[in-house]
Image 1 (cartoon, one colour):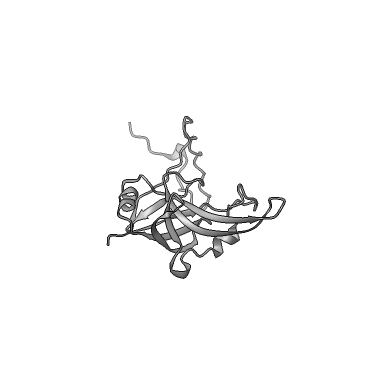
Image 2 (image 1 turned 60 degrees about the vertical axis):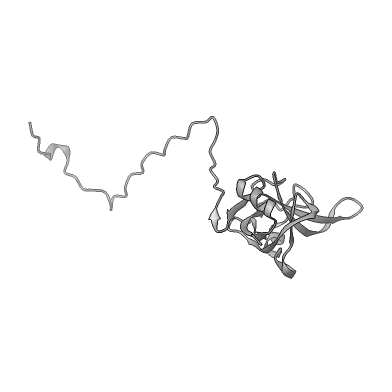
Amino acid sequence: MPSLSFKGIAHPPARADGRRDHNADLSSAEISTTNLGRRGGTDLLYEHDHGDRVGHVTSSWRGPRGELRVSGIVHDEQMIERVKSGHSRGLSLGSSVISDMAGERVMAMQDELSLCVEPRRGGCYVDEIDGKRVLRSHRASVGAPPPPPPPPRPLPRSLALRLPPASCANVIS
């Protein structure tokens, strides 16, 4: 049976102020303690359809910028082609959120991870397929020229090249 291994970002870093944009968003502590590889791996679905299980998550960990990173295996042949072609490289956490009567979050659980065309959370994409990097980020302002480089800093006196004064220089004519 063919398979495809992948790695990617399932959730961006939590907000620095600790607030959530959505009740299902994870805090920094939740990102650190989430284990999507438990009990044989969390189901990997296509577009949150529980009737379309396409693989499983093998592990999750906190990435270098505080994001939730995942690795997994896709075993569905049609989904393998969609991922390879770039059609479906988005990653989306399927979460159950329990709220109190006032609508405040009490707790949340990650039920599944889905491959999708367009994730709700920005930056959540497959970035490695079968050990090969498939996503690169380039951040540039559109329409604005780059800022000028800073002026060169003078060297400290201890490192400055000692040159004779201009009046002592030999002039060749």
